[in-house]
Image 1 (cartoon, rainbow, N blue to C red):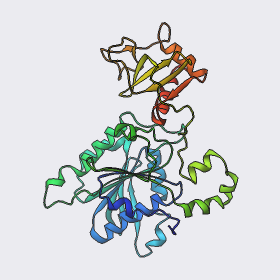
Image 2: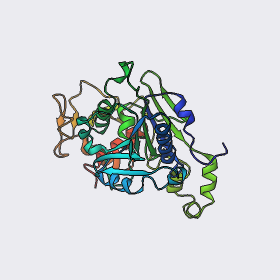
Image 3: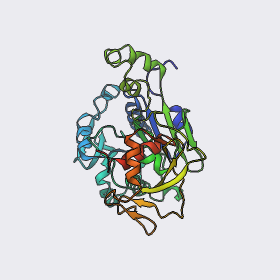
Image 4: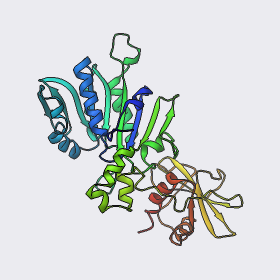
Length: 342
């Protein structure tokens, strides 16, 4: 690999409908897909949708969308028309694409998009506390996909959907998309699910890595988790601390339902450690929920810790005696415990 910028060729070669690309920060993901969408429009007339999560992100996108590509297309006039909710991307006064914020994507239902064959969702993974994932975000995205593509696959005269492409930096594998599609942590470049038409690429360009390491920011952050994340494409939030499988002698303690998943807590009385996975005793009465959305006839909705097994769970967590089956479960249980640990 001699080019420092991301090459989307191998990802596109799988012809998958739903694609997630997780790569080096600043490695050329956005530029590559932006120019691909524009080149395809200029060649075939096929349009695209550019998607961000919030209106504030769209507002910034509207100001800078063409800044990094203008020199590649000196003969063309680029223009953005619309609001911070939605609008059109024009090339020589003709519609090449559309843009939406996912928060207001329901407005797309009032229009049709027969020439759109690709949807690109930029920065689909979140880092920090400035933004949060939307409630039922994956379902919102799937509904937008249905709205844009409708039933064109079965229409012989219609432009067939090429796919949707989610672009992000490697923040954590415990994100709503991996959880929704049940994608477990893996250590190779591509995760491929042919049955569902889904591909995930975890991309790291060694040429880019070496150039970044030699840069001023690379030298400044050498040896930090930020360098591992932004340069080497290692997950910013995931690590192997407190990752361990439940021993066979561990006894079921309780279960907690959270965001549609059930987490089982198992206690090893020999060493005093707690282990968490997705296994649980369905006949146990010690089955809790934290939110009304997760509450059902088989769970006890928690208001406080008194007289619950969760009180013991919190104590063991604070004492450093809790282990998790994998990084996804670890991240989700951290969210659960944030209700009680401040």
